[in-house]
Image (cartoon, rainbow over all chains, first blue to last red; front, side, top):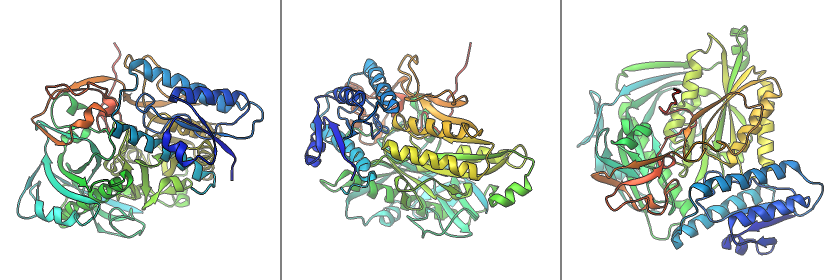
Length: 127
Length: 428
């Protein structure tokens, strides 16, 4: 089992992975910024900071995974997280995330959860 | 592996008492079709409508588009792993109803996108406005989980395409194209003086609503592998992806991969098209590293001189695209990338989420952030409500008069990353 930290602002990720080490944030951008802090402290980014096709200004949720162990600064992780922060700014510039209905928010939470779970399973963890 | 593709040109579609093709007109017995595709307990109701080129019809939200095909000779059947057994396909003869398609619609998630306008300015951006569409509206039972809904509609679409494709079994095609894929060593011997080129086919595999299947297997669970190009024409790859309308590869796109078709054009003359490497676009960085390493390894096993790499989606898959590019180029394999752009509404921002000096040859399908206003249509098939919440839409996208102002990323196939579109740029 790979020791990981999940950074998230998604309530259903928090609920599902409550037994793991979680760092919760208010917004998706705050998740990215906090992740960058950890990367600077030597934690390694484990999933890509951008979602597959759901755009940064569409979904208000983001969950990222970093290694629990802090070692040397990983420049690939840093480059990816910095790049993602720039992309978020680019998308927000044209349009901020709309005020979604509860149903749409729930769907975005689910998509974000499936991305985390897909990654978590890929590390050889069970659920 | 030799495959004949017999194209039966369809110029019109209508409902009638018998499902058949006669003189280029496809007639569909609506009741029989509904009966054939019904029976899934997850689906509460199914309706079928027609949408023809030039009609004032909007289909929204589009889930998948599938071309009707039937295998008339050779191993296996169409859509292996789904409709047919998992026999290896890609040889013999397949008949195609060219100019017809099955379109599935269904609001799987609240923010789902995918618009096909059959006329007006939006029609210019989607290839499916020029096709006679049989649209399946499948409504789920209450509280059906989203992934179950997607799976049910996916299967219904494939069943409908196979049922309609069957009408082409005994029809003399208007045109027959022949594609031949040789075993690697045989091809290398035959075309020993020609450069070896392969296609690296990246398939979306991020999880719920972002999946692709090969012979029924979820692509996120594969390691990159070889496939004969002709297998793709028989439906070995199908889409389970319902988001990212502009740059998702529908099953129709896979069946009609322009990269594969065009690579065949000069195969044996200017180069030796040795085959296709399929790979995935997974969530974790370790998966991306593993898959791109594997692509590079397979490319070296094929002793390639050049490769074309196509992407599906935006953001996270840009990392896979660039990793594949870097690792191929470092081996001396000349690499061309096909992607699209999210360069902002002014087109001035960086187009991709990743970049590298090795990416010296890049083809774009267009800027998905361009804005368009789609006028209201006389008829809407599906659900118009998602217009306010689709990707590229925003609060207020849907005006009172029924017009929609969106970025073109909401239009199915608008910036397709296999190059299956008509967008071009002109310098002045």
